[in-house]
Amino acid sequence: MSGEQAPPAGPDLGAGIDEATIPADRPLLGHADGEPVMLVRAGDEILAVGATCTHYGGPLAEGAIVGEEVRCPWHHACFSLRTGEALQAPALSPIPCYRVQRDGGRVRVTGKEERDPLAPTYPIALPPDAGTPATIVIVGAGAAGIAAAEMLRRCDYGGRITVVDDDPDAPYDRPNLSKDYLAGNAPEEWIPLRPAGVHAQHGITIVRARATRLDTTARRLELEGHEPLAYDALLLATGAEPVHLPIEGTELPHVHYLRSLADSRAIITAAGSAQHAVVIGASFIGLEVAASLRARGVAVDVVGPESVPLERVLGRELGAFVEALHREHGVTFHLGRKPSRIDGQGVALDDGTRLDADLVVIGVGVRPRLALAESAGLALDRGVVVDEYLATSAPGVYAAGDIARWPDPIAGDRIRVEHWVVAERMGQTAARNMLGARERFDRVPFFWSAHYDVSINYVGHAERVSRTRMDGDAAARDVTVRYEEDGEVRAVATIFRDAESLAAEIAMERRPERS
Image 1: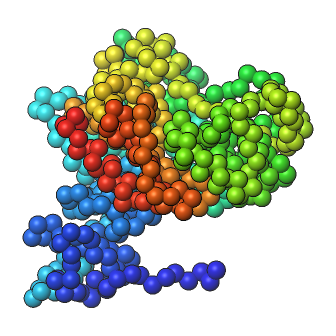
Image 2 (image 1 turned 90 degrees about the horizontal axis):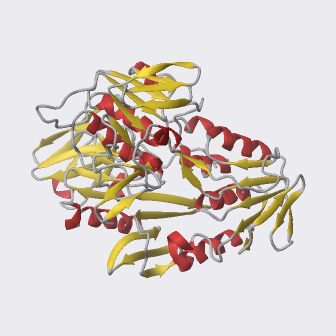
C-alpha cells in the first residue's frame, strides 16, 4: 500500500456550488478543507454536517434521512442534521456542523463547528415536577453503564455520578474483541471508548471494585474493599458472563473464554505460538473467534451440537451460508458433537473423536449476571424485570443491558436481548428516565456479526419464526432474509444491503403497536 489517501469525493463545498444541484430527497456529498461534508435540504433550509460516522467511520451520505436526522448505513447510529448530536448509539460522539452561506443561487459551507462529546447539549424535556437525584450510582462500565453515565452529563446533569466496575480496562469496545482486534486488524488504541481521563474530567468517577450487596431500602451499595456508596438513583448494568462448560480440563492454561479485553489479549498472545485451535461453540462469538484465528494463520476446528451453525437465529439457509464461508477459509466443523474432555494436547468429543489443540476457546453462550439483583430482592424472570421506562420493582433502581427483560411493543411480551447496541440505547434511555423524562424504551433491536469480509446486519427480534423469506443470494454476498411470526415481519437480516436494513428498522419503528 502506498499510504496515500484517496482524494475527497464530490464538489468542493468550501468553494461553493450551484444550489440547484442539491437533490431534494437525498444528501449531496462533497468536501471542505479536505474532509467529507454533506448537504441536506430541510424544508427551505440547507444543512451541512460531516459525512463520516463517529462510530466506525461509516459513509453517512449513503445512509437514510429521517426528518432532520441521518442514520449510518453500517450500524444504524443516528445524528441530528441540525446540531450534529449523536442521537442513537452505537455512535457516542457528535459529527461536526458547518455554517451555510447562500448568495445568488450559490451555496458555500464555512465555519466547522465541533463540540465536546460530553457537553450538555442533548435535548431532554422534563415534566415540571421532575425531581433530580443528587447522587447516581451505576453498576457496570460496559455498554449500558457508560452510555448512561455520559448521557447524564449530556443532559446537563450536575450531580454526582459514580460507576462501579472491577474490570480494570472498562469501558472499551467489546464487539471488537472477537472481530478486528482479535484478528489483528485493529490496534489496541482503538479499543477504549474514550481517551484516558475524559470521564474524570467530566466528573464521572469510576470505582474499581466488585459490588457485593444492594440495599434498596437504605439506598446503599456495598463494595468489596471499598466504602459503601449511597445513592438517590441507581442503574444496574452488570451485563453477562460466559457459560462455563462442566467438563474436565477447562481450567488448563491453554483454555480460554472471551468476554473481557484481558481475555482477548490472552487469546492473541496464545495465538502467536499456537498451531491448532479448537473453538467449542458455533455461536456468533465462537465463529467470529474462528475467523479471527484463521486471519492469524492458526488452523481451526469448530465443535457445536447443532446441525447448522446459527440456525436458531438466522435460519437454515443463512446459517448454511455462514458455515460454507468458514469452510472456504479453512475451518473444519464437527457439528452434532459435544466435547467430553480437554487435556494438554487436545479435545475429546462425545463420539470418541480426538482433536489436536494447543489453544482452546470456549464460546457456548452467556448468562445474565443476576446475583446482585437477586440478593436485593428485585423481581426476576430470566433477567431483571423492568417496565417500559426501564424501572425495576425497587424505587429508584433501574436496569439496562444484558440483564434487563423489558416489554417490547412488537413482540407483545417481555424480551431480553444480549446486543451491544441495544445495551447502549437502553443505558441512554435509563439515564434520561432517572432524571425524570418518563421516556418509554421501544427501540428496535439491532446487531451485526462479522466473518472475514462479510458482515451480517440483523434488525428486530424473532423468537418464534413461522416463516422465513429470502430475497437474493447469500453465496453472492447479496441477500435479505425476513423472519415472520403470525404473518408479520419480526426481524430482517441482510448481507451488503445496508439500505434495506435501515428501511426495515424504520418500518418497524413506525408500526402502530409502537405508538
